[in-house]
Amino acid sequence: MQAAELQVLAGGGIAAPLRVIATQFETATGHKLIIRFGTTPELVEMATGGSFDLGVVPTDVMKNAGARAMFASAEMPIVARVGLAVAVRAGAPKPDISTPEALKETLLRARALASIPASATGTQLAAVYEVLGIAEKMKAKTKAQPNPAQIIETVANGAADLAVFLVNVLTDPRLDVIGPFPGQVQREVVYTTAVAANAREPEAARAFIAHLLSATAGAVIKAKGMTPG
Image 1 (cartoon, helix red, strand yellow):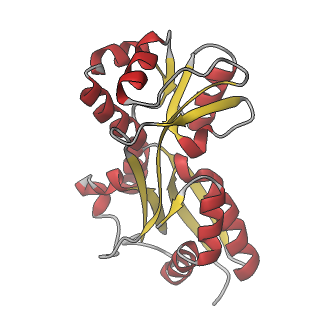
Image 2: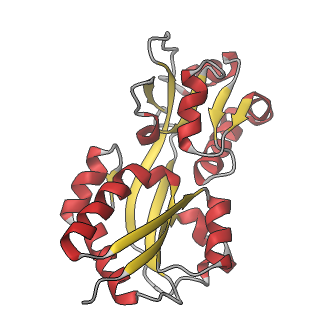
């Protein structure tokens, strides 16, 4: 197979393992991957507004009919899944989130939260807030960030008390992860993969997906705090 340049759309929450897996694939095959990361609304816009070869995206992207139509694959295997968690600035006291009621009280006591409401994670968080009966109050407390890196920065510099996002994203030296959401209200963001309907490099795209679903890639996904498949 001739070396190809693959255009990939991907969710920001899977960036850490995907970068490692992409490097593995490039080294093994000679192909080059150009990865554009985004939130769910951004990925929908990218999928419907330009050319690409494959996606590694939250399942929420596929709920948009326009975006779904841009993918050729009938089957969309799950690459990884990851749950919600809470973190504080490194060294700060860790409040209790061990039960739904404790989580609710911790969220209500916080001066400000850093998260990305316009994302697949934001959709899951909104559902949890509804269950806890604090949806409107959380809207007022949430400092919306453009990307995962800014969540970490906002809490690390003290502009927000809590980072509320995917546990793998919050694993950073500048933060201390308190823990995952309690099981009764835990939600997961699930990442799926598919070849684009108008892929310029469909054969190479399928080869990358095969690598993405391999045990080698699964080990990277697990090491980066996510659950493969």
